[in-house]
Image (cartoon, rainbow, N blue to C red; front, side, top):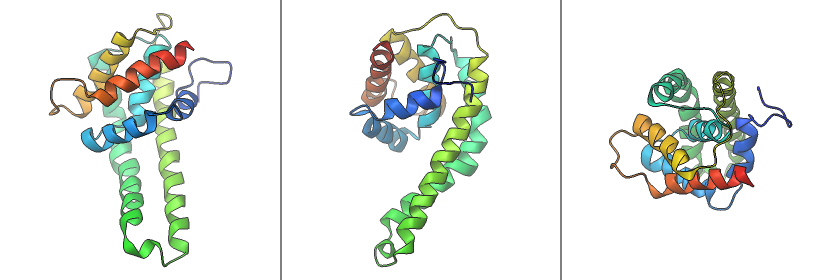
Amino acid sequence: MTGTDKDPFDPWGFMVRFYAVPGIAPACLRLQEAHGLDIPFFLALLHARVTGRVLDRDLVQRLDGECASWRDEVIRPLRAVRIRMKAHPWMTPHAPVPELRSAIKEQELRAERIEVEMLARRLADLPSAGPCHDPAELRDVARLVLDRQSPSRPEALPEDARFIAEAAAEFVAT
């Protein structure tokens, strides 16, 4: 990973801390479920903009294309298995099953971190225009990601995406 404790460009560290902010985790999950949003990708790009990287539609499209097969072939299948296991009735009577589900969840998170580390290497190389705490610019990043990953959604930015973008501006500014 490119970031360290002293390096402000640490998308994974940002995501771990930001995800713990009240309301962020459920908003992320709703966006993931309703729009198929790749949350690590979304949060990494928000962090990139907050730390001054300038993003545009072409860059978001390229980065998303680079992550698509990893997301589709590794992350989403792990998530699907984990979710199916939680909902299945044989989860409770068989003691080893919850442990296996937990191990799958750990691997899903590990796969997400690998994606974020790849993005971090690409994003760290972009020139920085200085920190950005403008909620409007972060909402624009949210729109770019949603336009790419959920093109058939209604035109308006979903409230959860707006909430997350505005919270990111405040979170990093503090």
